[in-house]
Image (cartoon, rainbow, N blue to C red; front, side):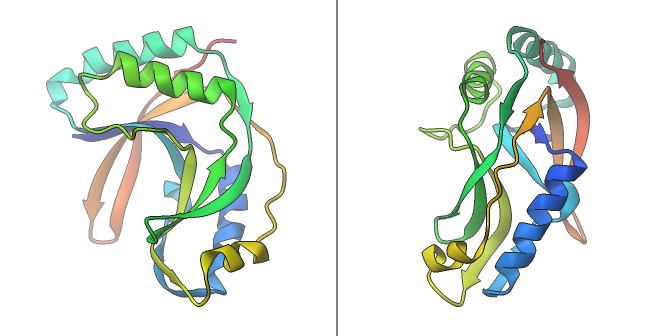
Length: 177
């Protein structure tokens, strides 16, 4: 099972991100939009995980959720990573960073790769090439200050199908408070 832990956005946030994708599309030469149902923020990528480890993994994630309080964040900026992915960044609130750090430390034996510095974001386009420099493209997108609560995290399974990558929520873990 190819797994990751993330924040599964509510419909309101997904709809907002879809509008951002539509704005970017006006300047897109090529690229693949992330489907609305797949929009999320990854907290920790676990990679291929044996199914017989799932119960143990879920207990560990629940322990992390029990230690971390719900928090508020918002979208605040756009970026292009490795000149391939167009993303919207999330404000790195104290609660968000503490949760991600706790997950990374607690689940180090499961995690297959960890970035040196965590940058909370949601990917909007993959393999994106724009008709002008991205710093000019992002000036055309109005990023509203739309704070939202994060009160749970999700264990996702990532799989490939004929229509592309699919992220299936397996289990939800409520944060304390």
